[in-house]
Amino acid sequence: MSRIAVAGAGAFGTALAIALARGGRAVTLWARNPSEAAAMQAGRENARRLPGVRFPEGVAVTGNLADLAGTEPVLLAVPMQALSSFLAEACPHLEGCALVACAKGVDLTRRQGPSALIRAACPTASPAVLTGPSFAADIARGLPTALTLACEDPDMGAGLQSLLSTPVLRLYRTTDVTGAELGGALKNVIAIAAGIVIGAELGDSARAALMTRGYAEMLRLALPLGAKAETLAGLSGLGDLILTCTSAQSRNFRFGQALGAGQGFDPTITVEGAATARAITALAEELGIDLPITRMVSAVIDMKLSVREATEALLARPLKEE
Image (tube, rainbow, N blue to C red):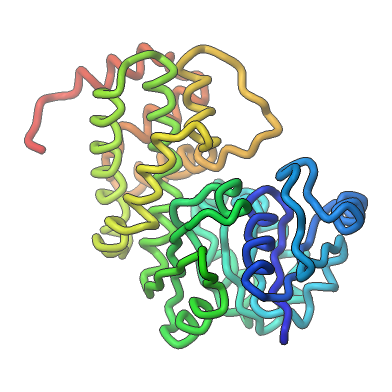
């Protein structure tokens, strides 16, 4: 049996490796820090990210990129803003491989999603995207989770769907890569906004309104870029939006909550929505698309507006039809 690889030993990458190994797959988990990789291989757990969750026998941890060669597919569980540099380093080992991006976001420099970065860096590779409503802790505990597997090639998508699904990890497939990517990226921005609402004690009614109007923004940008409305209404869009806007397990929600409450936030925690808010704000301005919530999130993150000023600006917008 060929090995599946997961590149990136953060909480989500580790959880995927554990889930796939429990499902009977042989998995190579790559960690950037060789000493951490050795510690995980010896201790059989990721004590820093998922303490107490033991690795199944099928998981082998490595810090050597060359060990990814010969694995198929490779799941790229690398933060979005680090994906481009990772691909530049790793692609010589990934020739002709199926690369499944698990990052949710838009590259701040190129203003592109993960599949475009894969095509540019690894032209012989075949890109796909794995996204949807999921927390690493739930996946690692073996709780039922449903995700979207997006791949332009229907046959390749069906093969990946079968390979990566387990009794408790259910994958639905689509050929709408653009919609799946944008749903996963844009919901993180709205999750920050929802966190701001709760942190500023503006109430659950305000959060519900924010989520609804945020979803309208997601559609307003995604559809002109080629996404399908039904994709945004599915797991990778609306499903993920609901999860990340309502649970403190979401890093983006917690980051927004800290902003709303005027509190600090751990800078070592990856918050994909922060960079995505900046990238999407710039992209929307180029395209002439009005995204007021996204624009306000970006302004608050960059301390150009206070939470109060951003709230007042949104509420002062002209009245309109829904």
